[in-house]
Length: 346
Image 1 (cartoon, rainbow, N blue to C red):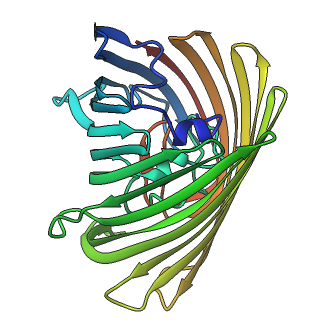
Image 2: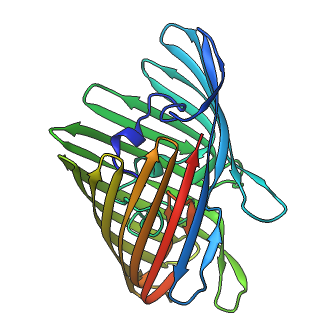
């Protein structure tokens, strides 16, 4: 769940927002922190049995050292903690970088900028259908060069993903934003291309395609008292380079949060996505998604949350950052979904 965009988009350092982290080492030169969170999620969909899983539990180590006045070096490695199976740990992030007065540079396996800045989705489980940046990338790149700059009244963020002889996707993005008089605003876009994107067909066979996703986005949030309301518009074109096939998308996300107690926030949102096929065998489609939920924080290191969603129509795929779940082509027919979850941080 993301309550504000600016704070997420431009953290001062990678170790920011780790209030519950366990300090391994600290000196005048720097520090090393061990952090993580354990998640448990109980979900129920209309046509499925109740499932109980670990969600996207993770743990990591983050380090930061000062090497000169105004120059810090940092690093971060993070692993996903599987709730079942033989492979207990899976690499999520592997980052090294330098922070200066002129901005922060980070290199390695990390989330793309469009996923950092996010949009008007405040859900834990079922939101994100209107955020169209992750259709091909899944919101992460293994060989990403990222730049963040935060000025007094604005911020800029950009990244470039190395394709490494087509073993990775081509990716480039640029975003900028500002915050004034209770408003958070940002605009930006990007393009990524996967020359060997694997698609699973209805008969379970797999084919590879040269696909390119081009996307542009604008978001505005307004905070007043204990309430926040946000709106995001996304325009995206999914282009199959081997043919003339294209799918044009327009997506609208409207969401809101309200702090009904000092340690609890209710949230809701509605997302609407239209898809228009151009010289393609893919049918036009429309997807609607509504969610409603609330969380309750016992303290800084433990919380619970519950959410309801109603979805109808078709989507090409999306990533919910809160649960790190990448969802491919989906079709729902008035489906109600329910979920409850809990997190413990350190």
